[in-house]
Length: 520
Image (cartoon, rainbow, N blue to C red; front, side, top):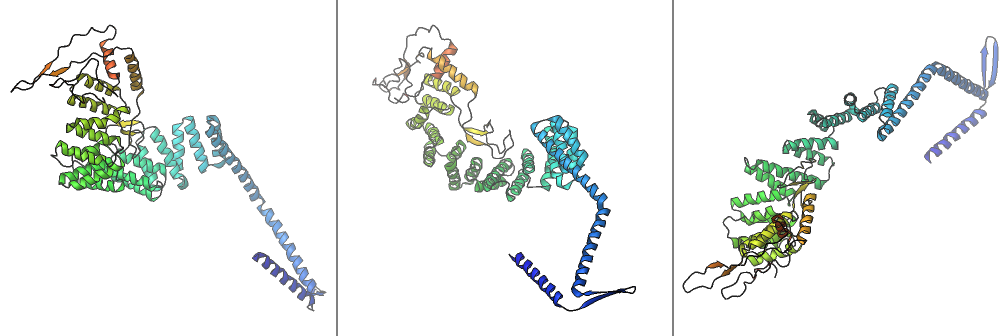
């Protein structure tokens, strides 16, 4: 709108000037060599304008004639450049589809037409990588280092080639790229991997802080990675610098209160100082986030010298904070076994047994039967079942199962990769369990184990235990000893574990002892 108003204002001013020029009286005389030519003022102005336009046209024509060689050369260069970029485009497409010969041909054409352009060097390097020509690829990436705009790209290419060849200079390229461009994700990830591999936790923390400040990773991921690195530093310093390890573990818990290893370390340190309330509070906070056996063990060991009943009380109190957790029942069952509270232990294990018991549950059941009833047959069955039961939760990262927590995945080098989950069952164990189950269906019942009877007490004598003689059963015809063990291993033990023809322990009055069976 403003431009239109300005245009009309100029047009109006020109019209007014032209009207004033036409209405202004006057003449212009031109004398030259005895000739005199007189015209009006308006005609004189018009003649000057025409002469000015003609001179401008002549000047433009002469300028075009003198610039014609340069224009022709520029046109040739533009056509050459267009052909070069066309070769680059086609070469990139050839690299994408894996056409090695076409990629090399277009890379040569692009280099001939464009010279050492960035895209030309990139195409040449990728074509060399596609054809497996490592020296040519390294040469192309090295030439990129001379161009400031392509130096990071050249360092990345050299890093990839060195990493592929397992060369030690790969770390040098990554460190240089991280120094020049900390925002490059590949450089920060590579430097972080190298520093964690060397257990340079301070250097790794610096990388995490730098990437977090540039928002390459979100805030929650940065917090968890810092907590993981601080915990790893605390574990390394635990033997030679316990105070420093304690500070690092405390800082890790501030960032991630559910860090199991840091919580256990801090709790045990508080317990050693006699500050039992702080130790308990640390574990209770972590237990609400992730119930873990290490936390349970540290919680029960907060006060050294506690009796088994006191440890059982602490276990039941901690279990109330995660009542639905599987680990809560296992913790209470373990403490109840140590306190010889067998009914409570059996009650805690009952639901776990009915819901596909793991190897740890089976071992606890074997221990319960051994301590409460002394039934060798049941103990053997539970131990056999533990060998084919599903595995208990463990630290798993990228398919790697570790018995202890690690800060970095040994497979991919990722930080904070380990999670407390149930590891996958191996194919061998699944097939073995299936075969054992099929074999058990064809086997006869297991032989009864030797029972015992408590003799009636005599006056002023101690009660003695005598074995009841049992008639020797006829040996089975078909199953071998190995088959008998498999039958015992896969025999169901979810509802009743009473063996055939086994009356169970008897009291002095002849009545059957209560509670000797598993679930009635």
